[in-house]
Image 1 (tube, one colour):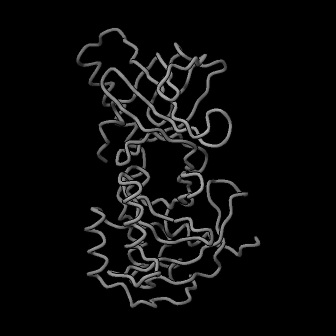
Image 2 (spheres, helix red, strand yellow; image 1 turned 180 degrees about the horizontal axis):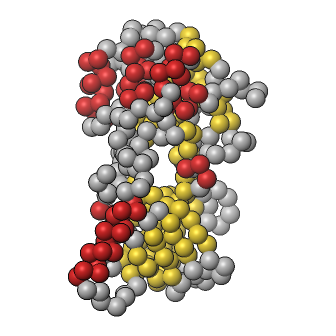
Image 3 (cartoon, helix red, strand yellow; image 1 turned 45 degrees about the horizontal axis):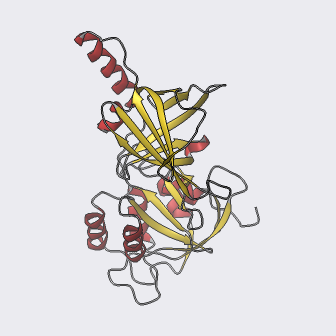
Length: 298
């Protein structure tokens, strides 16, 4: 795979030099401590040390801290140069920092100059480790996708007509990227509808549950009041122009379910929480999301 340049450049040792809250210096006790970033893993030298997993969403210019099952725990806008790193976190929730931007500024820790051969070997090692991530092609097909699509029960399938090859091609051109292969096949079989069962979980937590309202159809010009992939995508793009996803469903609370289209986690299903503004992990693929649907009471 081809690694995003930022994935390689961010790897190294960094020192926290300053923290800003609402643009003003903030007395954070961790100033001066070291942040060691390795491929997909980082250690913050607090007492005791804290280790997390990370991934860069280059399309959104966001640095994401990952939890179990691929759930995004938090994300920060990042600015990166050869010698400095700036992470802007938006603290959510209640309390004195709720909803306020918190900026962490780092400088790269200088190491002893390496020979050209040693530097090249280190860069190759970093690239090799990064390349162990899944291939980021959103067009790959998950195992068992045909059986899952055949088994799903959809009421009101193709109520607005089947999605034609031309419509799906046009959607891909607008998105600027290929759709995941299983979702593309689903659209051409069931262009929208209500799926049974409709209960699902998200965020890698058994307590996070919701119920699908509908799977979105592809409609070039949807009638007033009709939600479609095209219309919901246009609304998302207006609100978050750097977000590269395709919406595929809504739930009973008005949240959007979408598939990630770029980066090492392309193809994953996300729950876009309109209350918190967070993107919560829902499944590794569209196929896995469908296969995980259950009765709401379960």
